[in-house]
Amino acid sequence: MKNWKIMVLTVLIIWAISFLLSNFFKDFSDIKLGNKIAVIPIYGEITLTGTGNFFDLSGTSSNNILDAIQKAEQDPSIKGILLEINSPGGTVVASEEIANAVKKAKKPVVSWIREEGASGAYWIASSSDKIVANPLSITGRIGVLASYLEFSGLLQKYGVKYEQLTAGSYKDLGTPFKKLNETEKNFLQEKINKVHDYFINQVAENRNLSKEQTEKVSNGAFYLGLEAKDLGLVDILGNKDDAVNELKKMANIKDASLVVYQKKLSFFDVLANVAAFNSFYIGKGISYGISEKLNSNSIDIKT
Amino acid sequence: MVKSLVFKKNPAPLIKRIIAFFIDVLIIDIIIVMPFNKYIESITNGQNGFSYFYSLVLKNPEVIFQLAIMSFIIFVLSVAYWSILEFKTRQSIGKMLMNIKVMSKKKGFSFTQCIVRNISKPITILFLFDVLYMIFKKEKQRYFEKISDTAVVEEVLQI
Image 1 (spheres, each protein chain N blue to C red):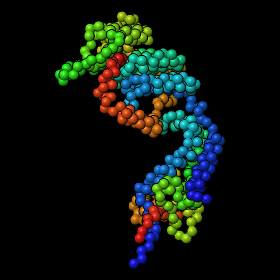
Image 2 (cartoon, chains in turn cyan, yellow; image 1 turned 120 degrees about the vertical axis):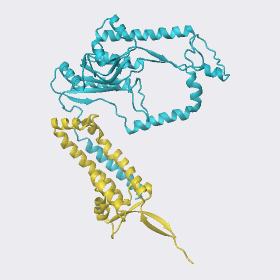
Image 3 (tube, chains in turn orange, red; image 1 turned 45 degrees about the vertical axis):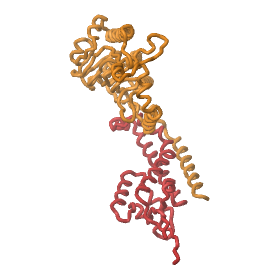
C-alpha cells in the first residue's frame, strides 16, 4: 500500500475512534457550581461590533454584551449580573442597546464603575439596579458630541475647488470639503439636542431623578465618584467586593462564584480580523483615504 | 573516472523537525482533540482561572475523573498517530511534508521503538526535557530517540 494511503487510513481510523469515544463522556453544561454571578466587562469604546482588530483588541461590542446578558439570563445558576465598567462611552445606538437590555434583565444587575464610567457607559450603568463606583472614578459626562473633519481652507490654499451636485439640500452635510452653513449647523444641532434630551430622559427615569435635577448635571461635565454620589448619580462608593456583596444582598444569596462572561478571540478570529483588516486596505488602497473616506459625509455622533 | 550518486542520511535540520512537529500537532488537534472540545468547554465554561476550576472540582469531584480519562485517551491516540505512521511508513504527515524520515540505529525497526520515541510528545514537561536534551547534545537526538535507538534523518543526494 502506498504511504499516503496508509496515512489517510490511519488518520481516518484515529479520528473515528476519537469521535466514538468522545460520545461516552458526560456533558457538563449543567454542571453544579452553586450560585454564580456573571461578570460582564465593558471596557473601552462601546460600538456595535467592537473596535477590535489584530493591533487593537480594546473596545466593547454591544453585540457581545447582548449575547452575554442573554446567556446569563438563561442560566439558572446565575443569580445576578455584575457589569464591570471602565469605559469613556461610545456610539449612541450601541450604548442604548446595552442600556435597554440591562433594564429589561429579570436578574439583579449592579454596575461597578472602576476608573471611568462616562457618557454612554454611564447611560448603561444608570439602567442597572445599583451603581457602585470608586470614589475617584470619572462618571457622568452626560452629553452628546458630534464631530467631522473640515479642511475646505486647505483645499482653497492649494487652489482646489469643491464641486458636488446633490439632490436634497442636506445630502452633502458633513463633507470635509466645505464649511457647514448656518442652516446645516442648526439642523445638526437639532439632532444632537434630541439625542441629548433622550439621554437625559433615560438617565432621569433610570435613576429616579427629576428632569430638572438631571438637566443640571447633564452639561457634559464629569464628576468624581464621591461627587456623583452626592448628586444622586451613584448609589455606593466602593470596590468590587462591595459591588459583589450588594448583588448578593439583592439576589438574596450568601455565597457565589464569579464567572466572567467575555468573548475570547480564538486564533481563527484573530486571523479573520487580520485578513479582513488587510484585505480592506489592500482592496481599497490609498484611494479610499483621499477620496471615498472624505466623501462619505460621515459625522460621528457619540455619547 | 566513474562517479556514482548515493543517498546520504544526514541528521534532519532542526527547523524541519520543528515545522513537521507543528503540522502533526495541528492534525492531532483536529482529529483527536476536537471531538472532545465540547466536553472540555462544558467543564471550563469559557473560564480559565484557577479559582474557577478549583471551586468547580470541589463541588463536582467527578470532573477530575472524566478529565483524567479524557487526557489518557488523547495521550494514547496521539502516541498511536505518530507510532503507527512511523512504523508503517517511517514518516508522520508532518515529516512527509518536510521530507524527513525516522530510521533505526539498530537492525530492524520495531513498533516498540516507535512507541518509546513518541511517548514523551503529548506530555509537555517530558517533551520539554526531551527537546532540551537534543539541543545540548552533539548527536541532535531527543532523549527518547536515544533510548529507542532511532534518529530523524534527511536523505541528501551526494556524488
